[in-house]
Amino acid sequence: AAKRAGRNAYAIFDPTMTMSVLEEAQQRADLEHALEHEEFRVLYQPVVDMNTSQLTAVEALVRWQHPRDGLLGPYHFIAGAEANGLIVPLGRWVLRQACAQLASWRAATPAAAHLKVNVNLSARQFQYAGLVDDVAAALADAGLDPASLTLEITESMLMADIEAAKETLHALRRLGVRLAIDDFGTGYSSLSYLKQLPVDVIKIDKTFVDEVHIDEDDVALVDAVAGLGQALKMQTVAEGIETDAQWETLRRIGIDHGQGYLFGRPAQPADVMELLLSELEPLPNREHV
Ligand code: C2E
Ligand code: MG
Ligand code: MG
Ligand code: MG
Image (cartoon, rainbow, N blue to C red; front, top):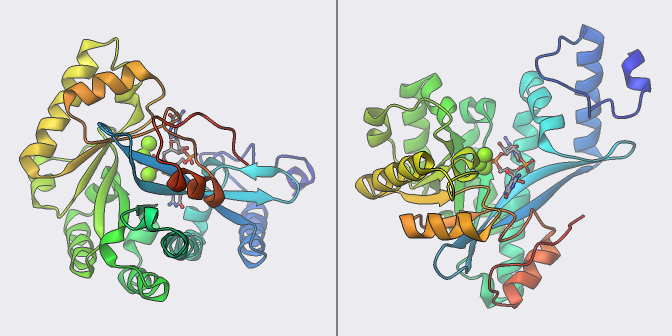
């Protein structure tokens, strides 16, 4: 509890650190309070077509506007929320927020007619028995067609319990939502299972993008994933593109979509609206929030 007195109590939160029962209870109470008092925010990062730079989707990324510690990124609270279970209501809130936001952009401009939204799921949310109902309700309440929503799941979530994961993915697929494997290449998905999963999109992790313009090994790896995507009829997205050189290399390899600071940082809804209204070349980097 002494730690709480200090500033940046969350900035120093480390999921591997052992917390006392009291600290855990306090953190849970803080997150519950934050949910109730609407301290969470959702920012939206552009996903663009690699060839035309057109905005095709936005990824919803949660932030905590902490009254004392300022704007906190997910690394400061997602692991804690995952551990104490609050990720389920928090994730549901993000999902509902993202669906409502897309509906609101669509109502505001025809430029958003084909825009999609991506929402990250956590492991616990993915295992939660009410997930499919939550997703269906979020879509229905926003009046969105299910194909406008892409749910992002990591490899480790899929491989933890493959049979259960398959069942959940198929139930989500029956709803009509799209499914993406996030941070692809950092986990251990087996190709034989990947083939059986109803996945639409592979998101290639930033670690393969960082040096792709200078490292032939990364080119070979990304090229292999592009081939995999083609063979399995999955779209490919490269994450964390920051430079023209990376973009050019990935485009040449044949990656379908790109995401990264080069095209835009996680942004406020009003900034996305601006983007929609202008049809842009590679987006200028801007500071947001
Ligand atoms: P992610 O899903 O892989 O999201 C991409 C992360 O990379 C985001 O960090 C984004 O801001 C960052 N990023 C994008 N482009 C670039 C770039 O060009 N350079 C660099 N250096 N970084 C880039 P963020 O927003 O801090 O999110 C981190 C992770 O937290 C996400 O990784 C995701 O796993 C998790 N997360 C975020 N929002 C949610 C949520 O609503 N629910 C759940 N369960 N997890 C979330
Ligand atoms: Mg993601
Ligand atoms: Mg990712
Ligand atoms: Mg990533």
